[in-house]
Length: 186
Length: 133
Ligand SMILES: Nc1nc2c(ncn2[C@@H]2O[C@H](COP(=O)(O)OP(=O)(O)OP(=O)(O)O)[C@@H](O)[C@H]2O)c(=O)[nH]1
Ligand SMILES: [Mg+2]
Image (tube, rainbow over all chains, first blue to last red; front, side):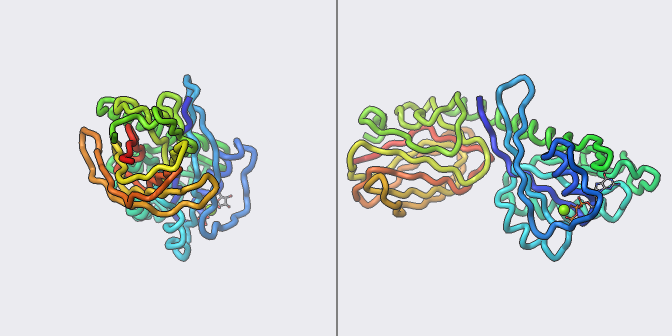
């Protein structure tokens, strides 16, 4: 049995639904907040994810970060050395998608050269009638950046857990890989 | 003496911030570089080794992988505070173990605290800790 720990940094433009997603995941879908309450700085949430077919788990330290530019510097100081990243935009805003590369760079800059596993999340999939970002476009960019692409709706409780479960499993796979590499060194 | 298992003269690992059943902390003090303790994510990581008596230590050796910045502190009694002994940045070794011998001032210590502040990967391993007393 092993319990891994990962710093999961959640970034993206203001009001795309980062806090909604983080809270839905951590409260097991029991709580969607309809009214917007801006995150000032970083809110830390912790949740343990069991890895299927093992007795192992990954404890995610979720750093739900502010999207407002005013808070960026303060957020960067809180992140420490990130393990994984979750970059969020909303499918109904092309601007929020175009910001994703800037957000990714900011997190990468804190990594001291360590590999950064990540997912790109297109949230608010319930607003399909106002879609500004095509799935294939997002998918293509994600692939270029080595990220996995997922669409979610915190409002409809659609796939909210998927980004976090995917990150936990990727981090677990990385651990197993490194463990085997180190085993050969002794 | 650097290669002697610390456990053979009663040393114990009394604190560790990561634990994988397959890689228990005792692996660091069994004198064998094939067994190792492995960190399980996030920095800093820490472990404390306690000796049965006060030891006059002149060199600390560490076989490891992926460690970047390491700080070693000592205390002379169980409840006493820790004082800085050495701080070092290890070189990155690709495909092999990092082997470092760190000279220290020869003062007394009953506990050594190792703080791994950063790494060359998300996970670091410690295969053997030895001392020259
Ligand atoms: N329609 C719809 N609205 C959503 C969804 N997710 C979040 N919202 C709404 O979008 C608004 C902003 O959500 P937040 O989660 O606070 O956004 P944020 O990204 O954390 O914003 P900052 O903290 O300012 O960076 C709120 O009014 C939410 O109710 C969704 O999937 N669909
Ligand atoms: Mg927020």
